[in-house]
Length: 246
Image (cartoon, rainbow, N blue to C red):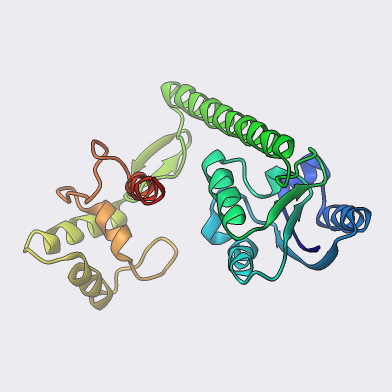
C-alpha cells in the first residue's frame, strides 16, 4: 500500500509537547515500515498554527494530493497534527473516504479502514473539539476579567493608543477616520474610498495602503453584509456545505 505522511508543529506546541518535526517524521517512517507501506512523501507545516487551514501551505497541498489518487493511506503522528476542530476532521475524513484513502495515526491507534478504528477516530475528534472549546472559553473569561479591571484587552482599535492599562485617542488616526467617513458619506463605495486615501497619502499603522476590509471597519454607518444577527460568513458557508451533502 502507498502512503503519504503529514506533520505539523508550531513553535509553542513544539516547546510544550516535545513532538518535534524530526520526531514526527521518524515515527511515521517506522510506522510505515511496520505496516509494510511504501511511504511516498511526507508533507510538512513547520511553525504554523492548526487554526487556519488556508494559511497552511502543506495542508492545502495535502488536499490536492488526495484528489490525485496517488496513495491509499494518510499517516499522521497524531490526529491533533491535522486539527482540533471537529468539523474540519469530520469533513477531511469524509473527503479521504470519497477518495478511497485510509487515515492512520501513530499515536492513538486510529485506522479508519476498520469500524473500531473509525469509532476511535470519532471519539478523538470529539475530545479534541472539547479541548479546543475549553481553551476558547477560558481565554474569553480571562479577557473579560481583565476588561472589568480596566485593562486593555486584545488588539488596540484604530484611532486609539495604549497608555498604561488604558486607551486614549490617537489624534492622527482619529483624523484619518474622519476623512474616511467624510468620503464615504458622499455616496462613494469602499473601492473609491481606498483609492482616495492612497491619493491623499494616508497609511495604516504598518505604513501600507489601506485595504477595503480595513476601511470598512472605520466607517461608522457601514452596514455589513453579514450582521451578528444573521450569522457570520463562515456560518453561511457551513449552511451551504450542509445542504450540499444532505
